[in-house]
Image 1 (cartoon, helix red, strand yellow):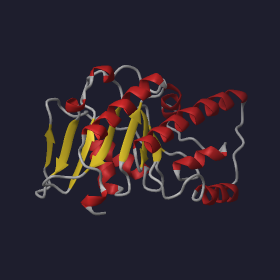
Image 2: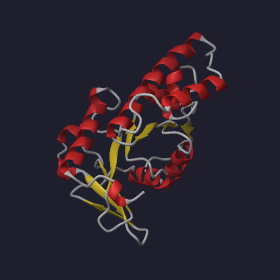
Image 3: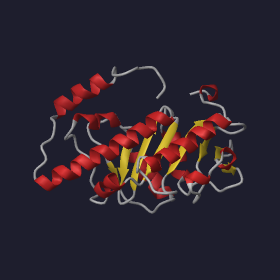
Image 4: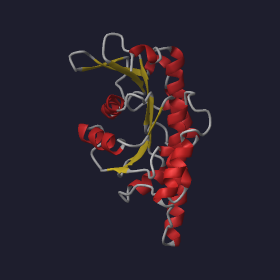
Length: 231
């Protein structure tokens, strides 16, 4: 994918990241400053660049100039720019952008219901057709690894190989999209599905949709809504 296809590093894009991060709190996907949000942008002199929320700063306190910019240089080294250090999970975001060129935005939450399911070290199976919003017949759970490490980045990129979002064992959720709104919508839906799934687990055996039915649902999702428009 050519650099020209990515948005420029603008104040509007930075504000979009802040608004998305604040929406995570208003939607109760996070509390105060947990989780992180990023958006891919054009690189000045590198091969890959993205904007990301800084480490440990409450989202209500952020201004556009506080958003960090992380770039991969031709040498393979990574450089961050801005007055604040990038999120401790910048390596995770970088690995996802490297492995999935179609991804333009990432939302990482510690939403309570989905995180509870992740503590079972289990994904969300196809008990409901909306699981297919992830791009697969189930929402997988990436094996646990310490936060902020290359090991976590490898675990999550492996789980995302055939889907757009996953749980992170004993940690939270990572959702991707072709834009901030799409990544955020997937994070919200993942939390909603996790809440329903936990309720069903309390009732006993959870009946699942068949593989054939999920294949049909996934096919219909490819033409659902406004295909071709950025989300």
